[in-house]
Amino acid sequence: MNVSNPIQIKLVAFGVLQEIIGAPSIFISCDPNLESCKENLIKQYPALAKQAIQYAINHQLASENIALTNGSEIALLPPFSGG
Amino acid sequence: MNVSNPIQIKLVAFGVLQEIIGAPSIFISCDPNLESCKENLIKQYPALAKQAIQYAINHQLASENIALTNGSEIALLPPFSGG
Amino acid sequence: MEEKKKKKVFIDGPISAQFIADSISKHSSKKNIGAHNIFLGQIRQDKINDEQVIAIEYTCYKEMAEPILDAIREDCFVKYPLTCLHIYHSLGLVNAGEICLFVFTSSAHRQAAIEACSYLVERIKKEVPIWGKEILSDTSSVWKNNQ
Amino acid sequence: MEEKKKKKVFIDGPISAQFIADSISKHSSKKNIGAHNIFLGQIRQDKINDEQVIAIEYTCYKEMAEPILDAIREDCFVKYPLTCLHIYHSLGLVNAGEICLFVFTSSAHRQAAIEACSYLVERIKKEVPIWGKEILSDTSSVWKNNQ
Image (cartoon, rainbow over all chains, first blue to last red; front, side):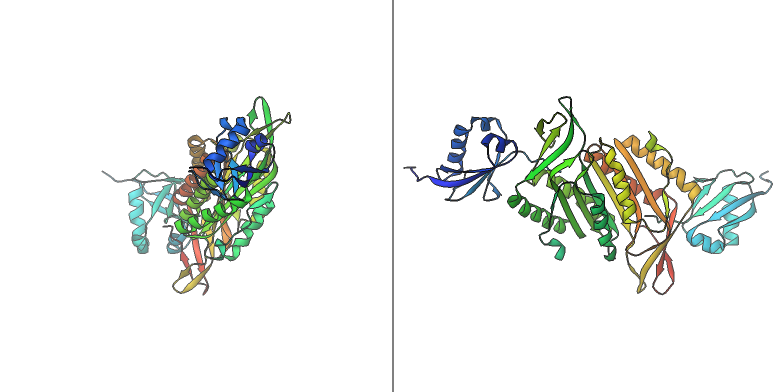
């Protein structure tokens, strides 16, 4: 039984990913884990599939699937290019 | 027959070596090679014997005995401490 | 210790030579400093698709960048015997020829300041969520890619 | 090529922050530069024999120092892809807290500027006939010894 109640998260996106999403931030509903959220996003924004993306949850890089809670902030980060 | 006519050279000295010589530059007579010149100097200024000294002839470091000509400029250089 | 506290990094627009001079001057009262090392990033007028880069527009994810910069600063003080360190990065538009990054390290002896400075530059480029959009002379733009 | 010509190195007294700022500003027109590295030597108020160093008085053997600096500069341009490099060293009195050495390298990408700058600093300290006399607070003095 991997049924879970969808939660509401804040999605923020930067650089080219912000251009794909079309806004600096949006609110979306998703299952309460990062992998499901990623899948949903790619379904909704197919252009994301071709991009190099790092994910951050509440300002921390998330390198594996982790649980999300209501109100989490997920960030879509393209490769950094500061300096 | 290693007799040679003495020549006149200009001696310049820097840092602590200038303090030992007592002047920024002096003219001295010596045999026309660096080793003889060094020996003369140490006889005349025994305090030089305890010092780390590099010699330069006409603005070039001289690491071995070389011939001197009349009017050569011999420099006594203590360890560099720029920067 | 005071040096390790959270400090202002982001500057609106280019970093001026006067700002750098003022920053250097402030260190003349710290008489245990023997060496400073400064790295400056300047916007290059590269050619991309036959068009010249006329500026880079920087954005960042501040809420994430600031704690990462704090951690980099902390690590650097642990790794190197520094007197102080300062990091400044531009946000917004910086024209070709202008300065967008200013990293400043100081120590009693030169080795620490020199090594710490490139340590910081590498970590900033790699770990801090900042993005540069290269603005080209035909008004098109390209997202910058750090090699 | 013009950069490789004989250039003024020696400055009477301390090197001011304003001089450094002006030197940085002059590079904003060179739009192939992406990175600058600057090393600054600052006079430390060391303690020697219980007395504080209040200044260093620098002298040099100019006729020998200048060709050596030219050779170091030449070697550096051969070794690293630099846009330009500048070396300034004080002569005469420089007080504790003031700047006595300013080495400035610029290149398209950061590695060359960073590596060239420490290459220059090492060679300057080791090879250029410059001497520092540390002036102590009781007016005695000690000839400086580079480690």
